[in-house]
Length: 359
Ligand code: AMP
Image (tube, rainbow, N blue to C red; front, top):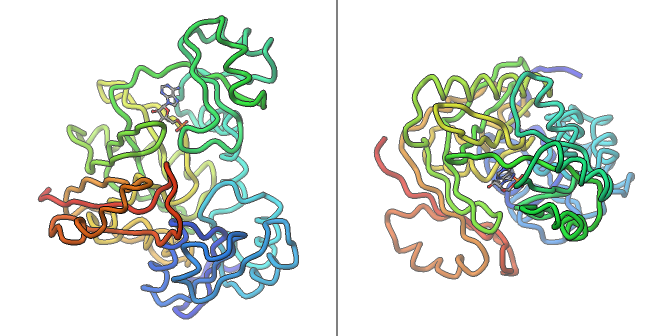
């Protein structure tokens, strides 16, 4: 399939229609594309801003093919789209990023192994399949440590901290006795992330590093550019992004979550093979934001300039936080983004607010 740039008016398909799909669809429309959404959820957030949407289960091969056959390129907005679904899509149109990015990041064990293979550091980790292998992993790695399911973990779900060897069985039960990994605890000073993009030609550009604060396993705020990052550290983050992006042969935006161990030492927590919550600040802080950047990459266009024109603090609106929309709308300092979700639930990401200041 050709790497030639897609002309405006071409159809770009997105597998997944949550808030990331919605913001991607909006950015794609701004570049003149017709964006089609595929999501099993009726009335999903992206369906209401897209040119067309398809609602069918992931395993409905006919529906996936019907969607994919109308697309000039296809992308995905979340990493748990089944690999069988992306295989059907990829047979019909260029899939960007490719299936490799999904396969290597859907499983935490495979992902961490891949990261180390690229010469990039992570915390120590071990495969856990039962209580015996968990006890052996605790012997090797030491405590405290965190037990995580290999698959389908997000926003801190499917994780249990172990501080005492006697808690091993309880932790195993808490994560539902599923295939898992045990990770050593990172003694980090702070959490950073680098959101980067790789073009069809293999060029990798990164947005400035951001600093992220989590609560209850969910991202609360992102401050960007992160304070006190010298150019050597920003360059190291770019080198990490380049090594991982090239290793995945990724096309599009991806995010690398980092632990800053101090003295500029960065290790990788995880890779998200897609636009990322810690990149939402770019919507107001950069001339070309992560959503436009992704659609440019998917379309085979040149990447945009990822430089920040302003400093930004992004605050997530989680659950009932979004009920303050009228006050936020009245605040001239607040750039409000709402995702159009019909139902408010505790812990659900409903929107975010960006507040700018001079660089
Ligand atoms: P994750 O779902 O793997 O991104 O983990 C969610 C959050 O838990 C991270 O953003 C960290 O705050 C914390 N965390 C996860 N793994 C570790 C680790 N190995 N050491 C220290 N903190 C961790």
